[in-house]
Length: 245
Ligand code: IPE
Ligand code: IPE
Ligand code: MG
Image (cartoon, rainbow, N blue to C red; front, side, top):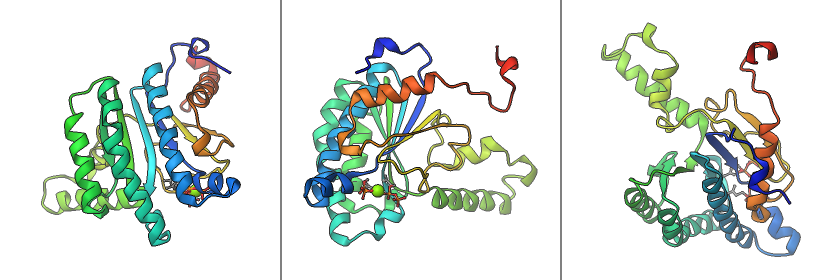
């Protein structure tokens, strides 16, 4: 098992995780899918504490996609219920570790109770400085880009912005992630190798890491494994290897 002493000082500033495999984990054990989601919340704690321990500044977790609204009503209700109970339970962990909660996504689509609880925890943790934990809830990258284009179009129409001034910074300002740096490392569990409408713009130069581990089994050491793997890569950003050294 690896430990954090094996890592060097090149800790990714922004790590994003597609937490996948709750349903398959439950099925394998003969449980209802809900049991997998429940166990998945324990893995969230592992990832959050693990990230805070090694000094990751931004952790973004894909918790519920715009497409996940199409799941059976009962499963959606379970996930929303778990969101509320986890927020109630985890506020202590967030305060203890000096973590600020943030949310990205179309929060208006969330049930009133979940949105209220979420905004409350965001407010209570707003001065925490050690790490930002962003939960992607009712998040879809295409929805985010449509919103961005609509907002920018309105500015252009009202002569507040001239089209030739639209650049990366302007687009960044309109994304849900406006206060976050680009993603350095994207992790997906459960063996699936796809992006599923997550942070399409923000992962332009992220390193991708896929693991077979199902999300409910994810532990701190699995995060360390991913970081260690990240540290063995050379990020060239279009340059040659020689230019970097
Ligand atoms: C991830 O696990 C949790 C959410 C998408 C909300 P899944 O529920 O997608 O689990 P699998 O992919 O069916 O195993
Ligand atoms: C992606 O997982 C969304 C979250 C992890 C919240 P899904 O399980 O919904 O993704 P697909 O549909 O299998 O790609
Ligand atoms: Mg899945």
